[in-house]
Image (cartoon, rainbow, N blue to C red; front, side, top):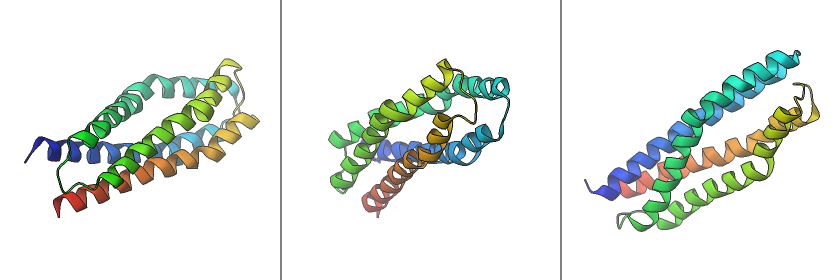
Length: 151
């Protein structure tokens, strides 16, 4: 097995890790935020969430991005580069939208100490499915890339 094959398998594994994390976030974490009425409990829960987020999400997704970009140069001859570029593209779009919308909204919710019933929290929960769809698409693309490369 060559380095490019190991790198592809590593990216596929990380993309599926991201898939599990984003669906947990969509189905459990964000839905839990909306059931709280008490502002203090809501922000305590969010502070715990933000303490673990760098380790559970930011670092693995950052590694996935670096490895995915590396794969654009170090891939096997059978790897479909167009699908690989699309996978990297979904990651870039996710980063851009997170910076423009969800990340900014999270900061405002925190700084302004908004309630779980605020319009911004509702908007974040309502639109998070877009990020979930992009991360899901990324995992599907890596699955297809892996299948084409190894079959």
